Every structure is written in C-alpha cells, then in structure tokens.
Image 1 (cartoon, rainbow, N blue to C red):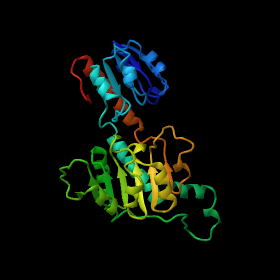
Image 2: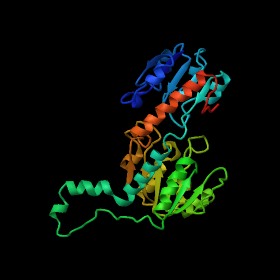
Image 3: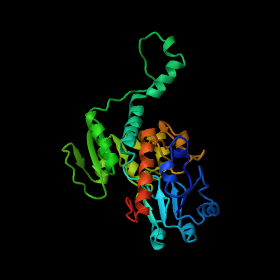
Image 4: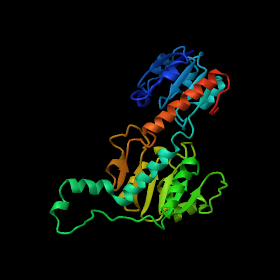
Length: 319
C-alpha cells in the first residue's frame, strides 16, 4: 500500500509518524504547491492513499490518478477535496472530527479576553517604560470591558460552539445561538434564536459554521448593519465567512468595536488584506488547532482512519 502525505509540515516538525509508516510504503512532503496540479499529480503518482491538510484535491486531480482509493483530510473541514468527484471515482474521503474542540473553544475565549482585557497592549506599554514614568499607580490605554451580563451569540452550534458557550456561561454571560437546523439543547441557559434575532441581540458574535456556498460572506454589509453598535466579532471557523472589505469598513466606522480572528479568506494572508489596516482588528495565523496535545490527538485519529480503511471498515467517512 503506497501512502503519500502532501503537506505535513505542521505535524512532521515535532510528531512521530511511525504508526503510519508501519501501514505501507510512505512518502512524506512538508509542503506541496496548492495551485500546481502537475506537482500534486506527480506526487500522488500511483499511490492508493493520500493524506492532505490544505492541498486541494479536485476533480482535475482525482480523475487522473486511477490507483487512488482513499483521501485522508487532516482536519474537520473538507472543502479542499471535491467530494462529488471522489464519490464518482469511488474514493473514500475521511476527516478528523472533534480532535480540536477544546483547543479551539479555549482559543475563541482567548481572543475575546484579549479584546476585552487588552492584555497584550498593556504588557507592551509597561515593557516600553510607560508605567515607570507616570504619577499614578494605574493607567489604561483603552477601555476595559467586563463580560458578566453581556450576550454572546453563537452562529452555528456544533461541539466547538457548545464548548465556547459553556465557558461563556461560566463568565455569567447570556448565551444565544442560531443553527441552520433546530437544535435540541438540555441547557436551560442557552436559547435558540433566528439569525436576525442573534444579530440584533448579541454584544459578542462568535462564528462556528463550516465554509459552504451558503456561508461564504455570511457576515456582510447587510448583516453587519443589523448588529448592535459596538459589537465584538470572533472568528475561529473560516475566513471566508466574513466579507473582509465590509468588516474593515465597519471597524473603521466604529460600527463594530473589534474583530478578533484566527482565520482570513486567503491564507497566508494577502499583504493587501483590508483587515490589516482596519482599527481594532486582532489577527492570528490560524493557530487555534495547534497545541501539541491537540496535534498529537489529530495524528492518532489520522492513523486510526487509515487502519480502518485498510481493514475495509472506514470510519469518519464524509462521502
């Protein structure tokens, strides 16, 4: 069984792939050019199993590699793979669900705490010497915000969103959520509302939906206009959920108090991305999933997925 890993740098750098190596003849690449179909095709070659993180595997690739039987996506989202083409060519596609739930929820709250507590800013100005030069025992560069009593609105209410909601509830926040399908929840403190009601009621909006044709630019000029003035938006899902030009304008006009996002529409970030020069925009380089413990769990499940496929009993299959 030939196994090819197209873009494993973020796991190759410090994790042990021996359990996967034991399953077949392995060729591992740190990176593959995502826009170079010829390189992707050449690297897949006659392999039966391909593992990808962000390298796209579209119909133009799948249709030209007849030996391919399995695509393992190293993550929960599978927008990099043409699922319809994979089904047509009888290629099994699996993902790694739930490996990062706690880490991403932790990170979403970290982004919120950075906006409301301004820890990074005040640490920096103290180290720059400002505190040593003032007459008072305290000072603050920007207003600080208490979370108790604020309403957080979750767009999407899967496992990560539910974990964020539990943490928010522990901060004595009010929790509302919108989900495209009605959710049965047992927590009496979490209230399901319509999309427009969420936009109108939430002091903080946290995004937790996958990228689909329906969710691209879900947060746009029209939806922003329905939000409260001074809303905080948190995004640990996909950058394409937000119309970045509309969001930059809303930040600069103080309609949105702050955006804290771990993702952008094009990654790595385009130097011309309007969010880079917008006011009160906090951007980190897609790292919510990246704690060591989380990546170790990811690799364990990748291995289990391949083992199950080889045994003829695939798990975590999406097609």
